Amino acid sequence: MAIRLLSGRGYDVIEIDNLECRTEIGFSQHEIGKKQKVVISMRLGCDVSQAGKSDDVNDSVNYRNVSKDVINYVESTSFNLVEKLATDVARICIALHKVPWIQVRVHKPHALRFSDSVGVLIERTANDFTDNVVHLSLGSNIEPRKNLKDAIALLKKKVLVLKVSSPFLTSPQLQADQPDFINMAVKILTEMAPTQLKAFISGIEMSLLRVRDPDNKNAPRTIDLDISLWGSEVLEYSVEEGSNHSLSNGHIKRKVPDPDILRFAHVAVPLAEISPNVKLPPSDNTLATVAMDITGRDDYLDTFSVVALFL
Image (cartoon, rainbow, N blue to C red; front, top):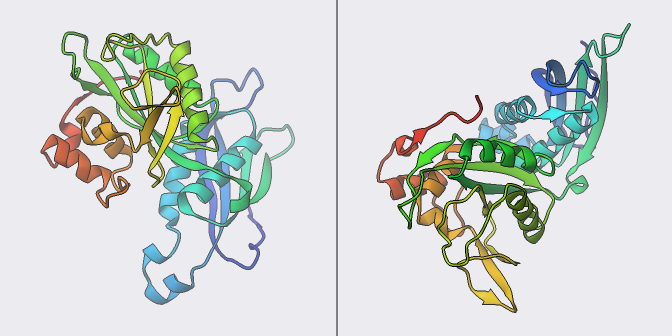
């Protein structure tokens, strides 16, 4: 397929053509639940002048990483429309790879009778989105496989789930006389503020019958969802739920980054698996370094057994 996309508003342009992915896309009865091929082309507006002098990929947009992020997201997500798929690709490139301008073309081969393909071409800038890159921690020890799968499915209804960690089997902390947990982490994009996101994930906990015992905060639970990292920010936000954090005006203050990242391996290890090079603010320590320090081992990913979740 010949690709002709316009250049971008005075930027230098990195071109990625005909990236092939397989994903569930479509709303017709014969399409639901079936993987189909989609073809994605991108024009990434940027400034490559420094890379042209230094010959260093760190001075440019790393198109290999862009492609990996796009493929990972598209192939792990289902869509009704190519318009949604194209918009999500634009959001990923702008939020994760700091591209100020992008064109995305998505084609769905053989989607229409008598036509080679049907597609959409969109153009977006950084001003079109207000996305935050957020890491969440998940845990469960009551029907954990079912509840973790359901929690991730419910997250996908309102946020872009970019990456999901392995499901790690971990021993309970602070109260040993209960079943083992399965702990995970997810990396998401959201335009919600911290209080809005917390309200959303608290709603997921309620829908999965999370019961909070005011007399035992370490009791077994169907699901636990916490905001662990909010980009590179250090912040506090108020919630109306049980917590160990300080009260202020009848509300409870939660801190981000979550202090439990530095306390518990079952929190640090899943986060380090999906984002090993992300720094834990306000320090310069990466999540991989934190996980190694807490576990006392370089091979921190082998600290816990990995169990089957998506059979």
